[in-house]
Length: 367
Ligand code: 5AD
Image (tube, rainbow, N blue to C red; front, side, top):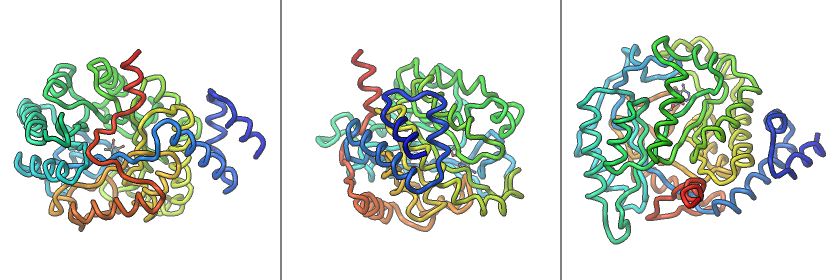
């Protein structure tokens, strides 16, 4: 196996079989070989800096019923909230003062005119309120508010948002159908990703790893899908069972699979780095939900983005997409110090006062 992996790692372009093989390794020595190669590519392409995106989970109201998600519409067991405009702007201003450079505005999905109208105003206000000598173009704004129409994506872009996260969740259409309600569609998701790209957003997508019924081939195809859709940013994390969802009864099984899914998630980061090279890849909070050192370990496998939580503490309890979300009782200032320590503990440093755009996007725009 060792020499097979070495041969693959020497190739400049991997194919589907190579990707599948790299994702299948289980021996520590093989994992380390893949990790260190991915890390070198990351250093070469994106440098050692870690970009920060302050994450503001501004509402848990959702019109969708994704079977895996804790804030799905039919979960009656949580308090629904939407932050006031002032709370959102204050959080954004706080993060600009701290030097974060970028924020992510994330919420459950809504498509009504008020939701979009308010969001457009909030985006432009954040822009104007955070423009300073340190940030001449204001905070970088990433949106993560689900499937919207082309024209609403465009309006939000024109208001100043320039990056968008919309996970494909899985690139296998049959598996996609199994984890979403019948009124959601794989084709619609693809159409949205294409619209976002067409409008000029830096496009972020990703998958969950360890979805019930997901195979190694699915995961290999996910990585190839990221290239096909020309993603600029990747955010992936382990699937984690939430007790108020269709998958609640899988909890004992997932407790047993925890280590396997964790390793698989780290390998997905490394192989995505090896295959896509110049994209931004996030070390997601869900990794830390499985193991306390998950996020910093993600950085050592080739990730270069981390998303400290900025959601006001009193709302964090109500924004649990999966059980065991870390940092629920902490304040944003704790998260800032903690993230800095975590990043430094693996020999990296955080980049302050910068947007940290995806190199892939910058290079594509120059063509
Ligand atoms: N486990 C892991 N990730 C989840 N997400 C939603 N529910 C879960 C879960 N149970 C992820 C989805 C979504 C992102 C915002 O959160 O991938 O796109």
